[in-house]
Image 1 (cartoon, rainbow, N blue to C red):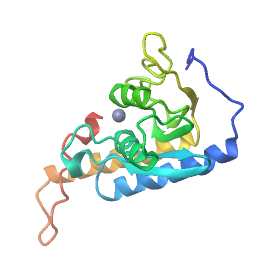
Image 2: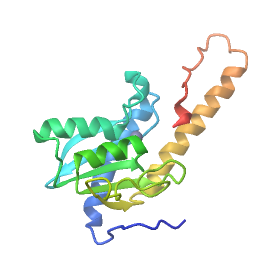
Image 3: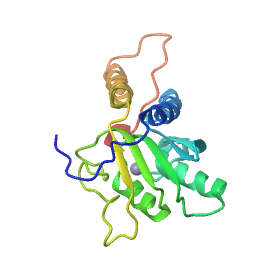
Image 4: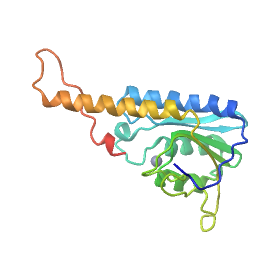
Length: 188
Ligand SMILES: [Zn+2]
C-alpha cells in the first residue's frame, strides 16, 4: 500500500504508543457495550484533555463517532474551539465526517492506528487533513501506530458479530436467551 502524503516520522514514538494505548482503552469500552470498537483521545502538553469511544448505537446518533465526541469534549476543556497545540489519537483512520470536523478544530497532529483504504479521509481513500488549500488548516499525520492492536480489536468485533448473526438463524436453545442484534454496525 502506498500512501502518497506527508507523514512525520520524527515524532516521539514512545509518547505516541502511550497515548494510542489510551485510545485503545476507549475502544475496548465500546466493544464491551456492542459498539464498533473505535476510541480516541486528545492530548495537549502531554496530558489527555478528552477521551471518547464510538457511541453510535448507544446515542442512536450516526455522528457519534469517537473523534466527534472527543473534539466536543476537548473544546469544552480547552475553552476554545481552536485545538491548536493538540494531538488527536484515534484507533482507526478518521472518516470524511470526522476529518472535516478535525480540520475545523485545527489540532496540530492526528495519529491513527488502523488504516482504512476504502473510506479513510486521512490518506487512505482521500486526504482531507492535508487539503489546505482549499481547506484552511493542515494537520500532520502519523499513521499505523499500534496498527496490529487497532486492527485486531476491529476484526475480533466483526468476527463476534458474524457469529452472533449465524447463531440467531438457528432455533434458540431452550433456556438460553438470544444475543442482542448488532444492527448495521458492520456498515461502518
Ligand atoms: Zn468518523
